[in-house]
Length: 136
Image 1: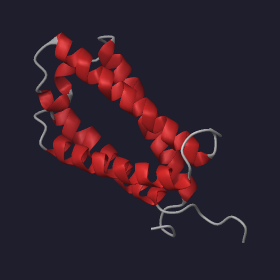
Image 2: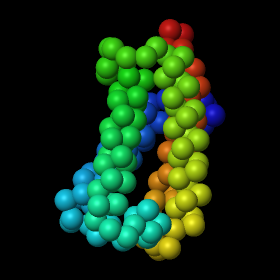
Image 3: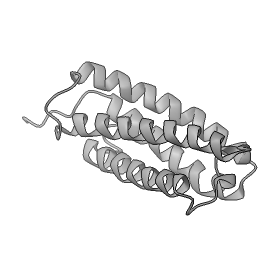
Image 4: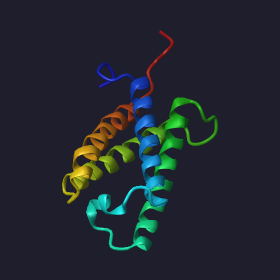
């Protein structure tokens, strides 16, 4: 996997995708994007949307922090071993999310978010591996 996808490509890939998804969640929260196209089309009220989207936004920001720590942009936080474990957890969550997107009643969710979450699985899997040796 290390030879197929570089650490840098995986880091920037996760950073860009999560940043775009974060903006998407903000647009849903402020009402620019209708909430019936997310969560498999199963949200029934604005209150339910606010709760689910707030949790999603918080998780995305947390994951962006994990990416920043792995990239070395944050000097504080968990060590490399914990960060690798968190990337395994993220890969698992995105794998489950990919299955959920496939089962969605929203064509948009299936068409756009299924490939994005699948890419996130691959990138997070790559980042769960030990860092590349840059000494040699």
